[in-house]
Amino acid sequence: MLWGGVADGGGLELRREGDGSIRLRGSFPYGKPAVLSDGGREGRPRKELFEPGAFAYRIDDPDEDMHLLVGHDYDHPLASRGTGTFSIRDTASAVLFEAVISRAISETSHGRDALALIGSGLAVGISPGFRIPPKRAVEDAETVEQEPDDGSPSPLDGQPQRGALIRRIKAALLFEMSVVTRPAYPEAQIEARRWTPETVTRVTDHPLKRWRA
Image (cartoon, rainbow, N blue to C red; front, side, top):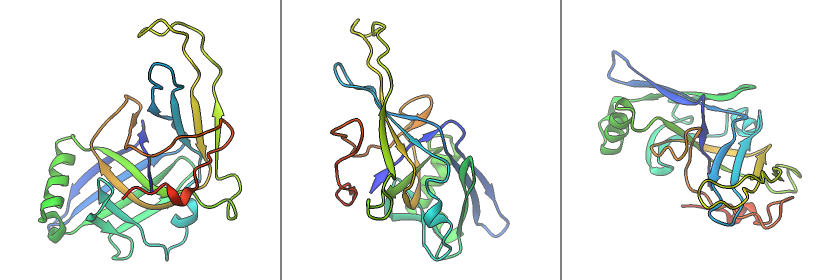
């Protein structure tokens, strides 16, 4: 499974209810490029962008279960569609969700820790867990394009700066949203994923092999 980052415009909002439950709202914006790698000394920077509606397929099917997790760990669930505690919808600009975290979950060790981190502002990122559908289902679910080389000297080593490879995701199977803590860049909060495109025009690694437990 691949993990995505969140760009500016996403976030979390907490509200405590009278029954001891906690209502959590969040969003994951479309069309915001996230930097996955600066490319190091010689490589090209890598970015990722989700097009509007990229996650619509499973979201629009009410029978597809989805979860809100802590750090992409299914052993640390906060809410789920199947239990009626997680609602999610797709819009033209973002994926919007609302979770009701029961008092029982909020009193578990992972629930208590997650809510403390959110409340303190240390964990305010949302990261989707997803897979790219096979080509037989969606031919052009993802593409990779290259920005023009900048040519200006890098402030780090003086070498000409290279244009980024941009992975554009048009269709993906969304399985979960996760609360994450690490803001890697000012415009994105990133979780590590395996993405090593061998060409500029396509990603050759089969999607079913890109699994992260």
